[in-house]
Image 1: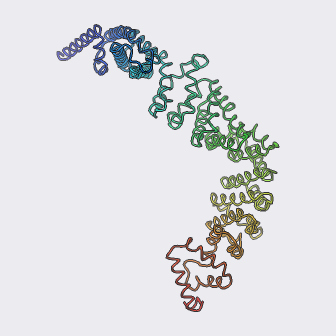
Image 2 (image 1 turned 90 degrees about the vertical axis):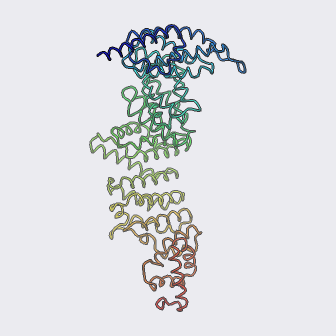
Image 3 (image 1 turned 135 degrees about the vertical axis):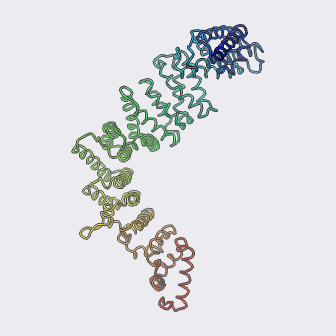
Length: 591
């Protein structure tokens, strides 16, 4: 008990001595600042109040002495005030450090004098133009940050200049992710400002600049901050949206993806008036301009922003929102006279497919889906070539992704329309190429048994791919190349052999007539037929020697590309077998 009273008496004596020194000399304040947190341990409420009064006296005197630092010195001139100004700035920085040590200690109350000190320091943050005051600015901002985060009384008064300083720091050329994270930590302070007041105009401009700052966009905390901005003030949403729209045509695709994430997360967090403005003023506005964009590049850029929302269709409420916002735009745009608008609308319909509201009855869901399939079928027959190309690519994409969910009564007619009509589109080879590219995508992304069975056909009905065979001799090299790519894709699919679509004899006929890139594709398809692996030597060479005898040009073209398609050991083996066959008078049985 004696030891406890002794320690208590020592603490009281030390505190009393420290306070007497602080009250009499500002230099002791500067000495105390580095260890303020440790030195103030054990202070009573009365002692904290005396300390606050001493701080107020020293800060008042130091503010008067530091007045020359509030004006920027002319370029090339010496610093004004000399040591007296530097000493005053040091006292102010020490006062900020001591006040911060009190603010972060939960056991200490906040006397009125200390609150007045914090407010006085806060008010000079942007008045300190002298380079010597840069460290003082940082100390004051740290005090205000700690004051806010500790939820101390009067913290609202310390927000305006603190937030502005953090915004300027995050927007500076030398800013780092740490500056952005620091701003994010103080985000709740943004809610105390009146954004309808003209005095906040400068701060709003800083917030709008955050929307276009790549550092803020690429930092996870920065994107969270931008999402938070959409919930500050309903009219401010339109200003944020305009700032983003101005950047969409000129920024990189990676940033457009991030803008899409910000829009979606802001929509997810919104409600009431905020949700209405985000849906109609932002997302629907992007949809409208993505349909009616004057240039293809602009339409693509806007779709890249919307793509993030399209990809979130599995989340609750997204499907119904997309249907609600797209409905007044898409169906009208698909029927306008302008082919560019129809093309943009078709692309959006395909990317957002299926547009549906899961909460509706099943019959209404079926009607909505059938309406979209009817629109796609109509787009396949559109007068505009670019629209037909988009429709072909889109139909194949939809069939690949949703084959199991689409009834055969819908999918089979679409496939027949592609292979019987659009694959033979005489108006543009780009449409014919799109058919082959789309079917290749379908095979590569949907190897389901139902899909392969439909493509293979049955004894009673031919395969939907059968009408494509004559296009091996198409006049366009692009079309022939696309068909060969489809055949190569078919060769990778188990249960669906490419000779069922194109006869090997037809490929042989084309082999010597095609340029080298297409010859290589043909050789890739024909080589396993004329040089089967894993067979005996007579069987391996029988067909090849017969081909050399009957179609010398075809054999030469096939063997010319063999080194690019086979392993060196296999090529050496073939050469050895051919040499043996030549020495045996061309008889494979003699080898």
